[in-house]
Length: 487
Ligand SMILES: [Zn+2]
Image (cartoon, rainbow, N blue to C red; front, side, top):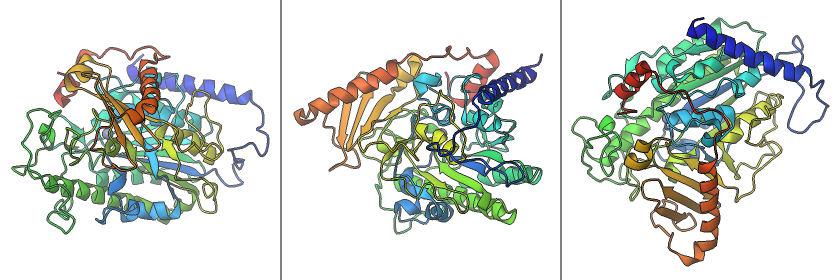
């Protein structure tokens, strides 16, 4: 059996298992909280689901979040027509682990994917957002824009259609294939045109553009030198590795520019470019009569440290879990006529583990029992619910050489522990929203710190319920080394 055939068989088995489980459930009682009746085929197909993850998109650089640059007119439209969850936190600061958490509704220690230098797919037997929807008759399709979530990751086994035809290469890491949003959206539109009108679809689109290096294919200098350029204009040395501290990471270096505000402006232009392509997709959905019949959710896998004093790294993510890296945008717009989100308190904290159960509830689909997140329609979190976020971990190199962070935001406090030396940090957002003053030695915080410390330790120490990821093949290892993920 070829690998692909084996993978297809694995997916079929998952689907068959899911189908059997549901066949035994019988009809769901009317009025069950958090679900709606799915119209029978012929009485109007169930709504489609469009989930967009914009890689490395900070929550606070968007128009609807009050950012002064006009980075996001189309995301602003989705936020206006739907709801913006103001305090959404990603379970992981790194791409692979974060996406797997989004799809499985489990934290990295539970699903076992903790970094990018692994086979990053959720284990075949672990139910995902896509397998739950496939079991209900949805066509499932993914269009990704980076090799990190491409076919080598194994994520494709959870989708019926998986498009990772990467068309370009990163500026400074030539082995790292990617594609700009324009090419990805073109591929999506071609797929949509081939879909039967009466079958609902789940479409996951991953856009890579805001991920560094910041070189938007269109108008990359649109914000350079504008009135909002004064953020933190420091000069930084060029780093000698991709994990350099207090320097520009090697893969981020843009020519001979060393001024931080230039890089921030270029990052914002990437957002603007991705947003424009997202707007084109929304318009095309409208032209095809699909926009009103589609549940739309946009979020990110993590944010990015740009120029935050004291956070050690610049233009980086993965190893730190400060606010700017783990707070992500989350906007959800219901299909026309649906207003189930209207009553949800969007000021409450939300984890990306809550996204899949909530989207399933909005589609009237029962979440798999392995999902650990909440259905936000019925289960709002308390204001002080702990929002855990883990940096990339699981290898000696990440934990002891690079140094990663494990952290939690609870109420106004953020607690972090550094893997390298066990040092701790505590920030209080009531008077320090930029997380610049470490209060860990402050006696007044001793009691909450003890709680937060044991919560983080328990999460990181949780043994995965699944087998450890398969060791890399020589080919995979060579590919990852070329990408700078392993040395
Ligand atoms: Zn990412």
